[in-house]
Image 1: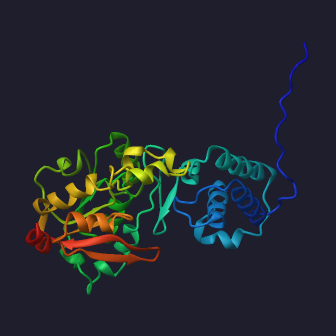
Image 2: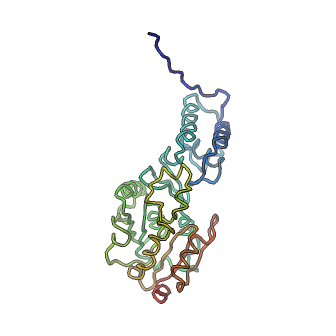
Image 3: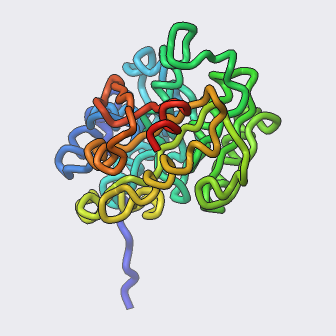
Length: 308
């Protein structure tokens, strides 16, 4: 009987430099019409991320290395990952187990959604400056609801140097990933992981700041998700028929968990109309970021208590 020989896919030898590999990846991604929705903004950024992480290059120095030659082993590794990205349609962050927010690296895998919240930008911006809505010096306790990978809780701990942060999630798997990130960033003494259903994780405790990026994709949105998003935990995305299943509870129960000078910062995606319809008396302040408009609201404890 003849032996069947498996042919190995050869790496194109004409791809000599890092920028050659990026160009090749862009062509593959565009031809396959992959969805770009997990931390990068277009096929070029996705390609640079995947190539850079495979070759262990610091993102901030990528341009400095872009014209350098790669070894045959490096080329094969990059091309194999490009092909895997196209074939499996898994988010690139899952393939390299890394995602960046505000320049900080976080470990991720399929137990959590890939971090991409607008709250990261807001935490770093003027909202929490001396002339902003919240005085950082008065933030002593922070709650991150639906923490997932723990990235927002970690960013909050870094933004408010004197604060203790509770990171809550109902998913045991998600908290295991969050624990990795808390440890990697050396914040075990200031970020406490709590398991439970929304505020059920923290009993009657109160906070100066509650921030949350809860599941808010409505039923029609869930049915239209691209393949990449279907690799993420469904319960971290699905917000019920109108996307408000968790947001209603977060807003309604927030007054019991906010200090007198506290406030709630919540990302709702395209749910602004549904939020305002559900809480017509609440004077939400809608915030814009570099890549979004009216997808995040702020409401302080006093205004919220008066309206509910």
